[in-house]
Length: 111
Length: 114
Image (cartoon, rainbow over all chains, first blue to last red):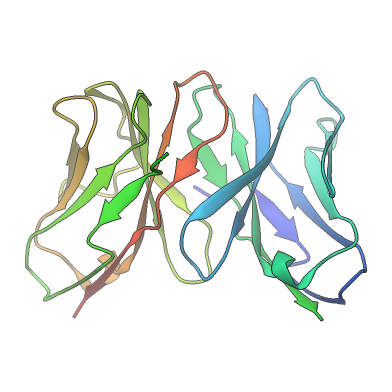
């Protein structure tokens, strides 16, 4: 079943702006991961944050995790046209990498 | 190095037919996962393998779906008596182990059941 739920589901921004998307989940988790998908095919792993971490950075990406609210956010700074994609959060509840994905955020970066 | 590969990239079949979808994981990855993604949705877990054994097949929708990984590398997802509702993109992923971490996804097989 889909556990993560991203919000907002569609975002259109100008190149150079920041993009923020949120994800909520229902059960306790071992870790939460964000993936990017272009053209409805293969997913690319962006970042993983463990349940005992609150914030993580990777390049232009910043992820936060609030386990008390069961929510996470992904921030993409200084967006580029190449960031246009769908972004999914996925939770690993059992520490075995069986991922439950949300419905995804569609982000369009306008050059 | 080579990533996860899946064949065929597209498969069109008729209702009631049998299909096999193949996944070649990254060499050395012991964990292999199958997901199914319908249009506008996130991937949905089907089954995962640790080595040759199916560690968790609880995501398979019914007994028409079966997957094998006989030598702990290549995996085949088999669907019997296909139905129109089986139409989706079937994604395969592999990871170094089951300890939790990055999954490497293949490009998927788009299955269309007419």
